[in-house]
Amino acid sequence: MAKAMGGDMMLQMLHEFREMQDEAKEQYARTQKELRVLRMKCRVVYRKTRAFADQVRAFSQEVDGFRDNMGEFVTHLSTLAKEVDGIKLHQTKMFGQAGRMLNQLAEAQSTDRKRIDVLEERMDGPGES
Image (cartoon, rainbow, N blue to C red; front, side, top):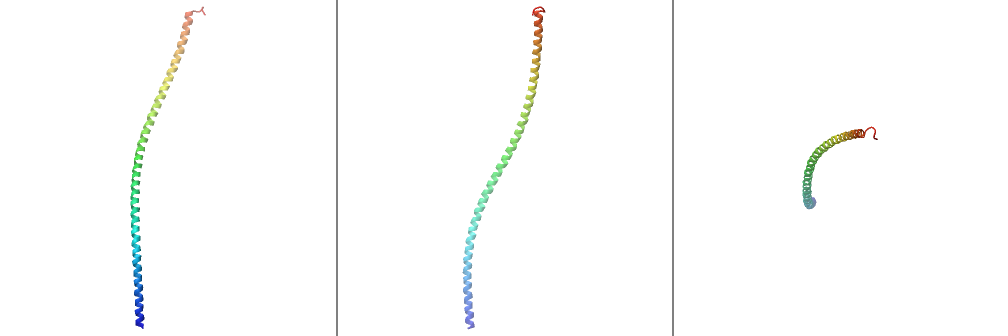
């Protein structure tokens, strides 16, 4: 009887072992399937990441170009500001000179008017008024 029980026990253990083996095969198949799905998802993420990296690289180049252009623009703007400042200074001097010349002309006209008045008085004589 011990032999029969030992044999039954062996058959029971063998049966459980086969069930465990079948479960392990099923679990292995599920794991392989999940790994394939995961690999595909990783490939998609990698492609999208690479595309995003390319876009970031292109954007970075655009920003570099913009920065270079902005630097050039600032240089031109600074040069223009200096030129405008020079023109303004020159105009201020010109307007100052024109003002002085007008004042001198007005004084000369006033002096000429006084001379003309004096000459007219002399020509008319002291008794003719």
